[in-house]
Length: 273
Image (cartoon, rainbow, N blue to C red; front, side, top):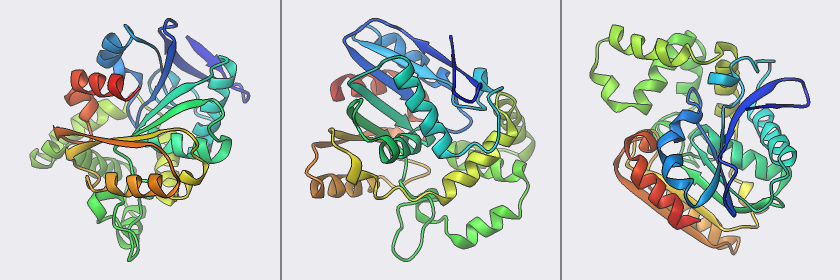
């Protein structure tokens, strides 16, 4: 099904429609709704599951009116929730999807939410002297950012994929590029570039002040893009804000934990909700 946004762009979504508990699951950059295909098969027995393709991704590839920022995606989420008349939503965001969830809460609060579940994502990608829980396990700093800005989109995407999928680091470039081209063929390049630019500048560390529902964090162990100790930071912020909080690590996983362990992921989601 397609949902028409206020600017005329259309995004693709799937809705199992049945279930007292509503669960929206948002994918990461260059991914799509199919990341949740196997978990949905399990979770739909208990929950009404809604997944969708973000602008410029997969079946929403044509929704490519630029610029597309994290704020744009948060607005899209708000329109979808309002348009489908959803209340008491369990909102889950993985990777970029978690960034969208944080931005959404900052802009629109938690009026329509029941629980917020973030997955393997930092509130701030850029690391410095005061923050070491950002991208590339704390190594992505202003120097790395400036270097990437001088690189081609293909190289930036290749480096990103090597971080997401550690096994790619040991493959020849032509094999990595073959995998990369397959992934990017399902996306609008302009939208992906715009989102990369938007994400690297975001600082959502203050989003917690707008959270009024229970918070959970699901993360990869040992992980690939982010340090597992990020879970402790979320816990500290939740305690300061007086929020119920739970962290769950999925063992023997990388940033692709949903693809790697779909059954365990579905079990974790069921227990959290």
